[in-house]
Length: 194
Image (tube, rainbow, N blue to C red; front, side, top):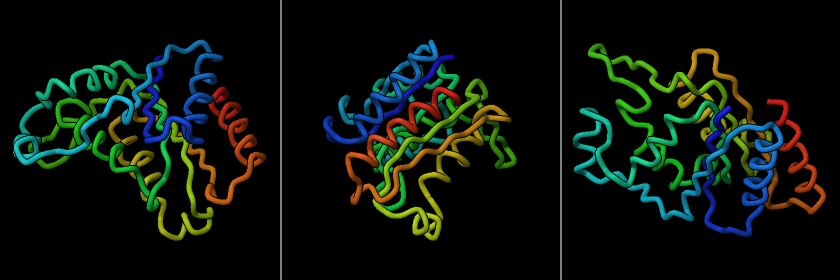
């Protein structure tokens, strides 16, 4: 299976970096081919400026900076998103990547009646590996907006029976070496089974 890992964290020594490395190990252990997109390391520009937005619905993005990302997206059969949950959602860098790369004629086609046709049907699995400062109960109370963006919105553009996996280390701000080690083990086990 071809697995695209989309990693988004500004600190290379963060716990999310350890999660990224664990994801890469789990993918390798299953003999899958992996590609890594590290949005901060490559200084991805998440901003969609006016000119880009004005022609957004007309055709696939023409910006040369997006072509490698589009190629990775079309190559993938499984996507694993690794990021911290900030303010209950996706970091701005990752949200901007979705805005600019998961575009018309790349991830979906706009129909004349306003509906969309999914174009990412080769993607049969999506996983999220994240950290949350809030407890699980509070994340449920506020509606898990980041989780819904990926596991509902993005999933809708993929294979009809696309499987999903969501793994979160809640109460990250109060975590301990033990809770972090346990979560790393859980990520490895669950991803290898997934």
